[in-house]
Length: 226
Image 1: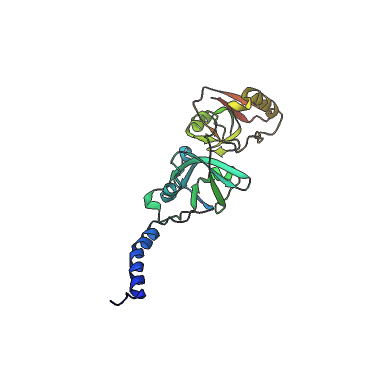
Image 2: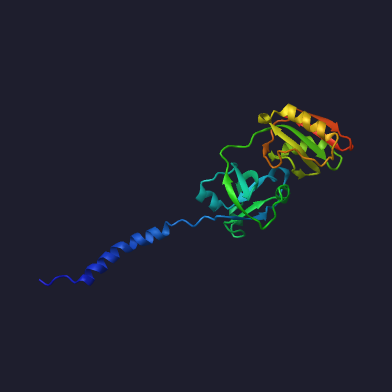
């Protein structure tokens, strides 16, 4: 009997491996972005000011979850927000390397649209605020309590809806002594001063008390206690 040709044998081997190679190609995951481009989010409200939007596809690929807190970082500067996704209907509008954030949130830390940033997971959620000092820029101090309650996450330096948060602390920062020192200094300094915890995120909880504080420059401040 004549021996089988090597060409016949190799062609059979090739046929048997073809389905496997096509299967591996189909299961290959797209490459994740190493940097993301900042773009403006739509229909921003007080409640969505601190929301960070990414692609639904990116959410699945990375294992990230909606409503978890995520850090947007550029060099030594960063901000923290609550993660969400744009809708499936908007998938054609944005690439997977795009991140949507409100302009108010970006300006408070000096970011610009078009900046390239990194996304970092937080090991734990931010602390809850214990004291806030809010400057009313439009003279309506009553609005402070209502507006702050709608903001899920804040930080010193954030300016929004006619209000500026000039001081924010948490339970771990010896809050009462730090607040007293800040108010004492504030009464003798320019009203634009913010405390040293700028851009350190704090969560907003239930407001237990609020009172007014007038400094030397007659600017109206509201102290919120949680």
